[in-house]
Amino acid sequence: MSTFQAPKGTYDLIPPKSGVTLAVREAIAAPLKNSGYGYIETPGFENVELFSRGVGESTDIVSKEMYAFETKGGTKLALRPEGTASVLRAALQANLHKLGNLPVKLWYSGSYYRYERPQAGRYRHFSQVGAEAIGAEDPALDAELIILADQAYRSLGLRQFRILLNSLGDKECRPVYRDALQGFLRALELDEDTRRRIEINPLRILDDKRDAVQKQLAGAPMLRDYLCDACKAYHEEVRELLTAAGVTYEDDEKLVRGLDYYTRTTFEFVHDGLGSQSAVGGGGRYDGLSEMIGGPALPSVGWALGVDRTVLALEAEGIELELPATTSVFAVPLGEEARRVLFALVTELRRAGVAADFSYGGKGLKGAMKSANRSGARYTLVAGERDLAEGVVQLKDMESGEQTPVALVDAVNAIRERLA
Ligand code: AMP
Picture 1 (cartoon, helix red, strand yellow):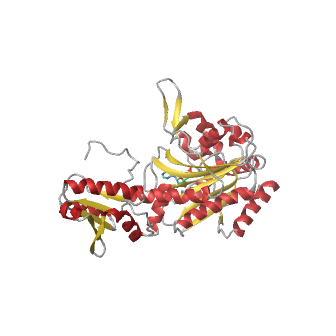
Picture 2: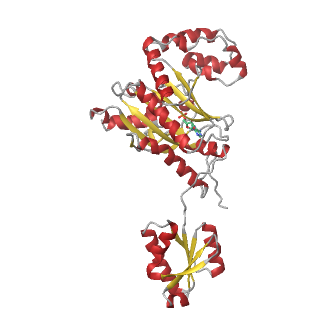
């Protein structure tokens, strides 16, 4: 063991399990790539104000969880706690919204950082795949994103997830509701922290998990009753499009989410096998975010799915993904000449697209066969001096144990045929 350990709240991805993480990322990306979303990558850190203005000063993410620091040059930066603000910043910077082709549809995959109290499913460094559709107000776009996330989870075999859906209203109707809710909350018996919250972020209190708080919330005014006609009609259309697409969802009037930029459509994907950290993904519309960070009005919608928790959800459902074989053929040379010949053959196999590996380090037959077994290879290639003299290599089927000589000149074809 080294003197060092991974920092608290982080973990390493190690084979073979790391293969599952890669497969999850690919499964989430596939429907996006197939639906007009282009790949975007932004830096791991940004100007800290991008997040304090975008995500919101009063949110837990910004007020407690951000890895903010000052560089030697005096610039205030933060490790990104989420993806949306950065992606929108990059799209504005590159003037993608001026190319006359709205919405700009983008997807991304990367690491995010939040100084949270670590527990199962909640880490300080975690991984998300996300999608953003920038610059269009169209319920079909909200529906598209929810449908694509549903498709991604289903393609992985997940079934025990639910989609929670809500509308948070817009800049017309939400302030009226906010006032009404504040009036109601101020009359309750709440601790000091929560009281402070009433003034800066009252909607978040609806989301409070504590029983003592939830009990008092019975009878609280609900946003549903305050939505303006435009928001109501918009939300109704999102719901209808989802239903028409056969995507089941639950209306959840208390769904708020921890980021200030959401307007109208808000949704979360929860998995019932994950315990308290049950959200595997979430998102919504953020019509005001562009203006908050100095851009023009660009109504937009997006989501981010948590890769770590999706892997945990697979485990909870007992799903084992079929991962591509890491090694199909493993070569075991006996002697110096065989080493050169088999190394060349492995190179040729790899160039022909066959997953092949080699026994390195001058191991004897026993040790090399152990490596072959561990590699999970379907076939082992063994060759010694006598085989080479005869122009053959021995191809051993690792399942049946059967061994057959194949002509060296034809070995690549012979192996490809067998693997097909
Ligand atoms: P959010 O950006 O908070 O909307 O989160 C989107 C998704 O990212 C969540 O549903 C989780 O699956 C995942 N996520 C957020 N925070 C963490 C964390 N600290 N550890 C692991 N996954 C997280």
